[in-house]
Image (cartoon, rainbow, N blue to C red; front, side, top):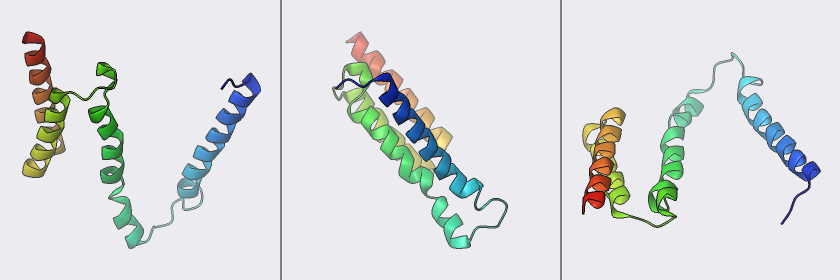
Length: 111
């Protein structure tokens, strides 16, 4: 499917307007008014819902391997999850996951 330049610019403009309206709904309409407690409570869970959705495709179908799942990335994801549950520290869990990934990729290159 080939798009013309006008169609591409139309898509860019529509997506730009959509993201502006989404942000404006919180910043422009709500502004400095206090938000209800139930909304603030729900907004706390946004990163917990979004981050796994961004990370899991990179673990299961990494671009570095051409989309093939590999053991070092799976082990690093499991180690990160386990460390996060155990330590309750984001920095510690990411650090442990990075060490496991680095070690796994190093061992695979060594063998």
